[in-house]
Length: 229
Ligand code: CTP
Ligand code: MG
Image (cartoon, rainbow, N blue to C red; front, side):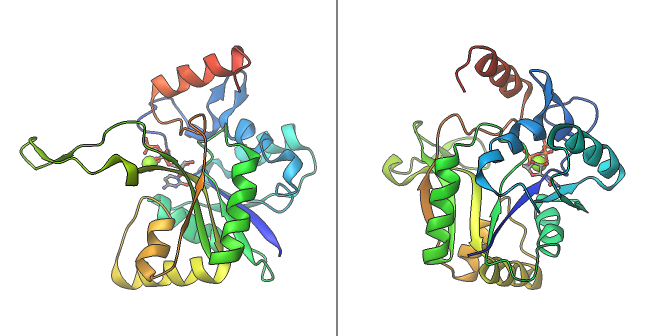
């Protein structure tokens, strides 16, 4: 099966609050997206990877990646207003003979390759897979007034991560259905499920957290400097 990596990196990083695109923010001396892509170095997935960037920053991304990955041929395309728009743009840049697409957030620099491989295997078999971890916290559902409405059984609660991996046909059809219905999700597996596809949950790692806030960035710096990742 021909597999391609698609990296949405077009977000502004409003919650992080640093100037410039979040994916270019320095994390312990290297841009965040460089640390994320380095995880894939031995996977064979960097060559031909589709990187979705803010349109005004495409040249800077290209230059930064050339500086760290030399002649590795990346394919760049422009992002959209929402993550879903960015992934949709990226999907159009996949090579025509690609069977499986691995969608991984630029903002998750500590993804274990075992999770990537497990997601590719699961998606090849059932059509779609998402990496996730069992929730260690009890999760509360509130009503609109801020009162407790429900406490779902933790045994069935998982925290979503990436990669989310798909047979390309499945993700294309799921995206077409979402577009037709005007549905906007925060991840891709929800689109596949909504379309009627089976999505296998694959075990991730607590360290595969998404750099979202300044606290996440501080934690990531500590992990790198202590050799914990
Ligand atoms: N992303 C994207 N295009 C968008 C929004 C997000 O490609 N329009 C990407 C981000 O670059 C990131 C991933 O999707 O790698 C997960 O998004 P998130 O962590 O929410 O990043 P941002 O949207 O940049 O952050 P914020 O929501 O705080 O602005
Ligand atoms: Mg966002």
